[in-house]
Length: 447
Image (cartoon, rainbow, N blue to C red):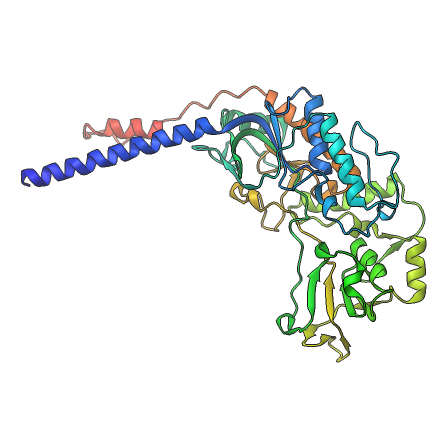
C-alpha cells in the first residue's frame, strides 16, 4: 500500500475515533440533561392525583423527588372533556380524592366544571405542581440498561414476583433508571406510576360497509349534547353507561332512535354493597392476573336501575336490538335482511387503556394484556399501573394510588443484592494455544 493509501486509512480511523468520542460526549451530555427523580407520575386524573397525594404524604417532595406530568390543558382529568349536559347529578359513584371531600356542589352544574374545579383546588392545596400540557412519547430503559425481564432472579419458578425475586432483580439493575421521554424534556426515574386512563383511546368497532355509509359516524367521546341530533335518525351502538345516558338525551329531539348492543344489557336492581363490589372487582382482577386485556368494572356490575332508566324502558327508548351485520349507504342491516335507515351512527363502544408509550418496555403478554400483581406489572416491578383494570373506578383509583406508593417505597428502600461473581467459561483442552487467547478470555469475562 502506498503512503497515500495508508494515510487515508489512518484518516478514516481518526474520523471514526472522533465520531465515537463525539457520540460518547453527546450521550454523556444527554444523560446529564435528564432530570433525575425517584418517581414519575403520568396522568393527573383521579388515579394520578391520588398517587401524588400518597407520595407527598410518604415524604417524597414534588418537583424534587417526584413529578406529575399531564397532557391535558387544565385540571380535571378526563372529566373536563365530558359533554356539557352531563350534570353532576347524573354522575354516579364519584368518590372524593384522598384528604379532601367534594362538598357544597350544585347538582345541576356540568360535571366537567364541578370536578375540574375540585381537582384544581386539590392540586393547589397539596402543592402537587402538575406539569401541563406535557405529552409523554415513550418510556424505555435508560441508556445502557437492560429490561427488567432479563435480570436474573426477577421472577420465581411460579412466575410470581416475590420479595427475594424483587431484591435480586433490583440488585441486578441497581443504578438503572427508566428514561421517560416527554415534550418538555427527558426524565430519568427509578420508578413509574402510570395513570393515563382510557380517554385518549376511544374504541371504534369495524363493520362491513362502514366506508360506504353516507351519514355521520362519531364516537361517544365526541358527543357534545343532543342538539346536533335534532330531527335525525340515530343508531346508538353500545351497552354501557354512556350509551344509555346519551340515548336518553337524544331520544326526545331525534326523529327516531335505535339501540343495538352486542350482548343483552343487564340492569341492576337494589343496592350495590361492598360485597358485590369486591366480587365485581375480583372478576376484572382475575383477567389482568392472566395477562388478558381488562374489562371495565361496569361490564361485570351491570347498569344501575334508576327512575329515569325505568321510564325510558317503559317508553320503548331502551328497547334493545342485537348488533347489526353491516352498514349500508343509508343505514344498517341485520343478517336476516332487516334494515333501519339512519342519518347518524353513534358508537358508545368504550375505550382501551392509553399505554402505547410503554411499548418499548415490552410489558404485554401473548394474551394482549399486561400481567399484574396488584398495581405492579409482573414484567417490571418498577412500573405501576393505577386506574387500570380493577382500579379503573373512582374509589379503586384512590386505593390503587396508595398501594402503588407503598410498594414503591419498599422497592426503592431495598438494598441491592451483591452482583453475582462471573463464572469463567471452560477453557480449551490442554495444549498449545495462541497468545491472544488470554485476551479472548478476558473479553468474555468483561462482556
